[in-house]
Image: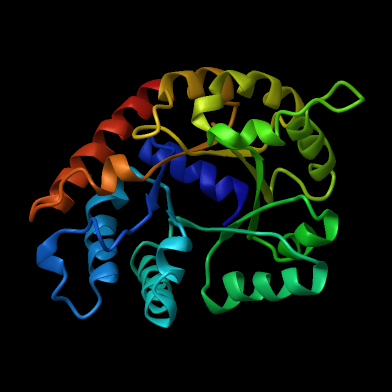
Length: 270
């Protein structure tokens, strides 16, 4: 998916919502547990209920890999279902990969060909050759960790370097030279919303994937105020607040309602 195609979807749906598919077998409704594939069945119903209000889905690989071969099969089925039924949706594999060049090329092929997703979250700390393979396929995206929403992000990301810049700023300045705003996004946590003003000075045109709205306490209004650019430039992720809005038979209906609430708020900011 290209930059313009993503922006077109945002305008058409008046939404920049990304729904996180952090599907925990311990939290899905009990009546689904007798299904042949409970995780996929849960995802399928969530996707059908929310797709009109969002422009992206972000399955987190940890929730699938923990189940081994069966979990990965659920992940692949989920990706292929979205591709077949809602091809306008951007699919982000939240995998947080990052390794030496030849290994990264294998990860790239796994997520862009075998799976196949549109984007992968990546850790940049092994340098250029850990990111570059993901920038070599047109229409695919590297989503680089910049300033995350977890409390211990300050252990490294907020450390001040001898140059006076913070480490996340060094990451932004360096990695933006490897690709462009057409194939690179950055992860910036919603709980760090006021930092977005500084981030936009470095990467004014790039899309930012912003987790942490909802259950983690991030403010959509602040994210829009400090992070939006002329092409919106935001994908705001909500996971638990949508997919676990109910653990009963009405779970999909409640997810629909929560996604709709966020979409209406986003429309107002657009």
